[in-house]
Length: 230
Image (cartoon, rainbow, N blue to C red; front, side):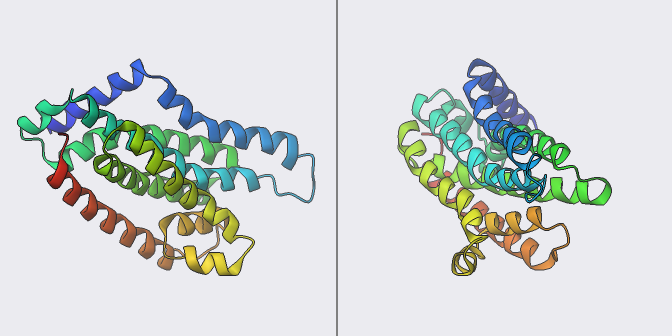
């Protein structure tokens, strides 16, 4: 727990010194709010919550992935965290420390989306929980990309297209059954399905999300052991 806490605090201090990371998290809820107020509410043909649910799913798959990939790659590039590996910090401890802080911020943003959605009671909890699952899974994906990248610039260059595909793919899937079939194996598609349809069955989406999470976690552990923060 001491190792996890040290990494968690380090990441909090880093974000305070670099507020641009937080701004990246705020973009999608702000855009969702603007579209809701200026487009959805004045138009009776557009559901009030459409843009909130849409951008919440995109946020969970995109913003978190790019942010943590950049954070992890920066740790490796500047070598300021080399002492962590020397101190015997294990991959799960590093992920829980750095990823835990980024995920915590993401969960707060997810709560913001849940409030804007207008859901109440069990639907509110379900919506927030679905976006939270996307945030946590994207945290592992982004951390893995950050470990594999040679430097921070490369991490952003790799993570951005991956995050855009995973983030915007489910939006395209709403208009194309063939795209929906292709993306059905990815966690972001299942997050989008559950976020946009509060009556959808939980069983298959949760199984797909869990399978994605386990696969990404195994990949992160392998990447960390191979490359670490060196």
